[in-house]
Amino acid sequence: MIVSDGAYGVGGFPGDPPTPDALPAWYEPHVAAWTACALPETTLWFWGTEIGWATVHPVLARHGWLYRTCHTWDKGIAHVAGNVNSKTIRRFPVATEVCVQYVRNVSFPADDGRTLPMQQWLRWEWERTGLPLSKTNEACGVKNAATRKYFTADHLWYFPPPPLMQKLAEYANEYGRPDGRPYFSIDGCSPVTAEQWARMRPKWNHMHGVTNVWTEPAVRGNERLKDKKAQILHGNQKPVRLLKRIIEASSDAGDVVWEPFGGLCSVAVASLLTDRRCYSAEIMADYYRIAVERLEQQDYLNAYEAGDVFTYAEETRVIQPTLFTIREGAFRLLALAT
Ligand SMILES: C[S@@+](CC[C@H](N)C(=O)[O-])C[C@H]1O[C@@H](n2cnc3c(N)ncnc32)[C@H](O)[C@@H]1O
Image (tube, rainbow, N blue to C red):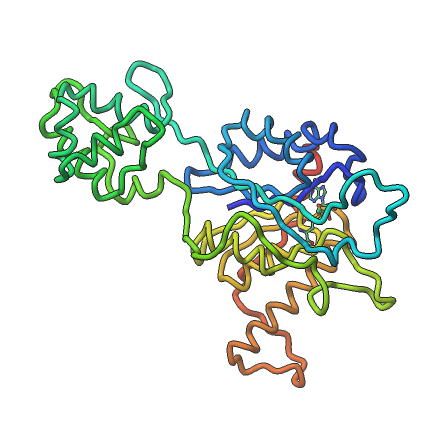
């Protein structure tokens, strides 16, 4: 999965354009690079202001990213309290950001040279077999769910569950016209298996009670990193609690998380806490150094909490197999691309 928390178009950090108009060009090379590496399982979470995201959406759509849901982070009234001059402001104060979920628009090559979206490809493959559509129900061992859900041409379409997809593929290849085989093949050689099919859609681990409105104060207290003069170290630090939520929802333990705009690398911290492997990039040397220290400390704390033999008193650095890596090389590469 990818968590993007980059330019906002508000001049918020060195290199952040002053207005949203410049955002499409700013994001274009990054989106192209993410697209080249993304799998059907990949989810992209795009943080921004409302207008910033709206401005970048066409770039994402052009690169085959499919909009799923816009989540509003409501930081609450405390975020604006004391900051509003009623004599000069001509709108209601803003206490939100958005985090927008995108998935890949998965498509497959058809035997006639076209590339078809998944829903159309399923119908195309079945039609090629020469079998009536009603036989899809027999293949799945259901009354009418296959025709009604998995082979419908309308918006009520459902992704066929992997075990049923395997049954459909086996049936089609056994009873379909012999000259068209293989049917429902992803590699062009053999019919799709349940395991292969399960990887054809983005991961989703559902959480009950969570909606697309996230009420959470801006980062404060111990979590907010400050210097010796109590000045905050990064104006855009994201709450680890929200990052853990999106990581757990769209990936599994051991999966790779890509954080292209690290800042203080809050995504890497959340990944470390949830047993994911995170790669982060940060272009500013000062932020990069602070992030490294933060991650090393977090790694140390994790080991300590896990009952490791090391303690602070021993002043021994814990060298755990790292679950995170910050790669200077990666950010240099992206910096060149922008
Ligand atoms: C909105 S902040 C991210 C804050 C982060 N989510 C956190 O919680 O600390 C964006 C960061 O991206 C960095 N950045 C901008 N362009 C970059 C690039 N091309 N490659 C890597 N980092 C970049 C900026 O220096 C800034 O620190």
